[in-house]
Image (cartoon, rainbow, N blue to C red; front, side):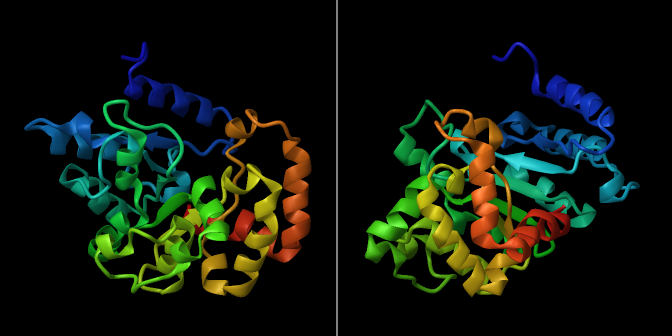
Length: 265
């Protein structure tokens, strides 16, 4: 158990955010397993009401959204999360969720088995049920699947976006997310480039082509460096961020760094 409970961490984060004049926009962490008891639904709704007061507009709230991390051991369509999705749709609360095959995972399972929790296709039913919800699939598929996109042509072969998950298992997640956003069926679906394109310069030209060729996808991509992760790499984050801006050009960079995040939040 962590020495400080997550509720206390959220309280501390709220204090910090209030001291920054809007420069820190915190999200709260939600895990359905914390609400696995007869009063779980009521507890979850109470937490949401506390952090996202319905009487305040989204831009006046201290907390701006929710963060999910499914590879810790749960599906985003877990029925215990149904009250959360309903509340998010009703009260304009965006959700950021981990969506790559890397990162932290449940030590009770093998990493390969935990990836099924993060599959982009898991969000289709959620967005069909709650079409007003905004969800960001963080990392645009992740480092592993961007690599696969170049090296495995079979992984780019698409089947219909609403086909069963089993029929889409071969598709790399970069291609999946591009398709799910580009098809227009899920207007609340976003993704971000956090850490993925900062892991290697190899991906910058590909990102420029993807964003330049598809306005629908470009309008749903958010900039981010995942800065604490970049500290583990042997490169200059400032240099790479400027190179990204140079490769994309000022107009596209401004769209993903300013316009799109404003819409998402």
